[in-house]
Image (cartoon, rainbow, N blue to C red; front, side, top):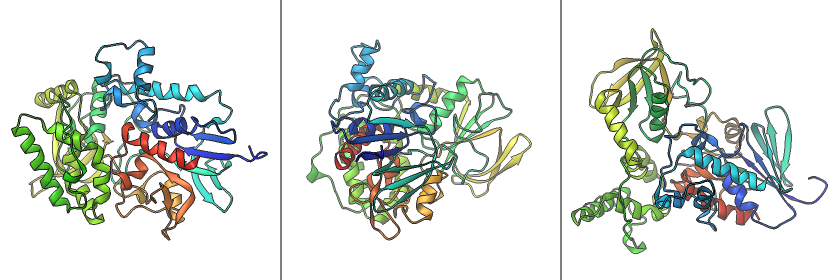
Length: 443
């Protein structure tokens, strides 16, 4: 590659974000383009979300909206039909995530014969930048030069340091061997659902206790017809309290007229990123503390059959939801002893857990990320957490801002790392347009 003048784009992370960006870049007919997809795990295209072998882990978006390409909206549907799924209701179905992982792998297979593309299996631990190129450094000391580097590392695969002794589902420390006692899951969102389903498939004994500050779980999908909204009726730039009041009023009036709150939430979806950007920094942080759990429960919903199954497990006592603040976690006679104070209680109590799973979602302070390349970039000042520290500080073109607030010429971020800028940037329908726009800029 170094013997000819090329534009080399290194993408760090081979999950959904990395694969979707790769796919957009390789639509170009440029001969001088080189794409290196860097993935430390066995296969590109899987990541945390789609690397599951559990058929009950299903997508939370209907199949019709899950194409990896903006310009080919039926790409996933066509792939499903090519693989024997020809149901009449296919576009509206919520397919298993393992199938979507296979779809992403098939996209990589499409490009493997392209001489402009390669996959490099390695763990990036540091990045340097100079006037002529960026340099990636890997854990074995190997180095690689690139014209541009795009960080697409997605969700952290190691537990948050805030929850000692915890593990992530399917990652280091987790295994399918039964263990004594009950299970504690930190978090009550979609990741908790995944963990609960996996534990059920393992026939794990004991009660599964899921804990979060408010104890809110995802609500059910249902028939929906998104409410058409116009720009001039959405309170862009208003204080958070006024926006929430407007949303509650809108939903109440719609329900009084026979509609569903889902219609209003889904109607707002095309505007959520703009609405987020219109908030002050103080209101963004306020929303994360107080409003996000309620938004997530209504916005990131469960397929009806899973919601029914969860309700049955709660009713039977197999699953216990606890609204509480976690305290000290320490080794105990039955695995671990966990202190918690239930919502509204004045005193803490202690419970036992044979294993603790971290399903707490986003890291609220990116500076504490267990990802080594992220820590290196922040510690050296090449990057910084946003003022809303759930993501990196980025300029309008998705390039990294350093500690001096200067935009990088070579380093960019996509997907969940861009949460502070976009808020909703975890699902494929949100990631896809970001990847397409960045691909156009890089090319």
